[in-house]
Length: 410
Image (cartoon, rainbow, N blue to C red; front, side, top):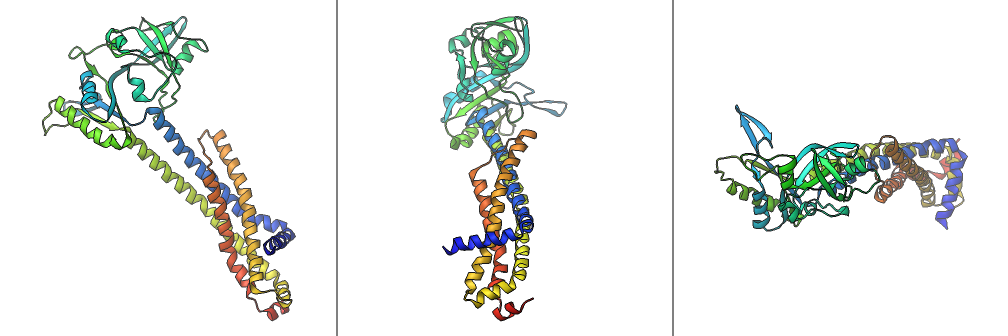
């Protein structure tokens, strides 16, 4: 009952000076709102990175071909074709922990259906490509080993290609032309969205690797078995580092590289790349939250200032209450509750401001934002702590006034 009575008295005291109370709460409102909005921006960025990791495929290693050297200048990875289909088969067969591995080639071509055409990426892949990439079919089927062995002219469309050529129509069974070669559409992929580097993963047509080499992308005269990249799915995230080293050792052995020679390939662990991005995002979230917390600190100073003024204005009232039997702890509790009430009301209004601000940022700036219950709880708890921390000194000062001097105060 004492607490409820004290809250009622505190609210009555705050209503006496409505404008002053509102201005005092403004610092807390802005501080709490800023913390929620800034953390939402950082959390949204982290969530977006996690979505991109999932869209690429889990536990994925990529092997890229080596770099050519001309006139003492290294041309960069992929400038010479050093990987073959047999390398992918050897990785899948000889390295424990590898679920699947396959080579693929990629190019760009114009696709025609009726009076519609679209320029898109053409990927020659193997039947286990969807397993490696954690990709599903929306309709139809994927090509099989028989399609690969027979260089069958079949195609599976990404969502962007399907919408560009067929709109809302059903593409299954339709004939499209890739570089004037007819292909039968046998499947449509589910939507993947953009990759972390902004590439539209749905803007692709998948065809059998053998068909891509013979009919669309061409084949190396020196080695008909070459591929542009080998993708590897590992059974567990804990095995990624070990499998990566085993892949390096196996390929060096297969390519007959001497100890003093550099690798003619590059094995990339995408999990490490994305982990670095996620860590950067978490650091940004903490930084934004810390910057926004400065507003809370300013709001707390405002509460202390206004409570000191209140103690000064109500000195005679404090003396009178002590004279009729109020104890120091009663006075301390009364002023402390007033400070906490100011902070909590400001915290509630700040939550509304932060949620609204996060929504507006997402709508106007087209940034991903994510409001979590944890961020709201932390911001609201911080407001309560600030009310107690910055309100304690004025409350303590009021509680230990000399009653006689307080009654004499003019």
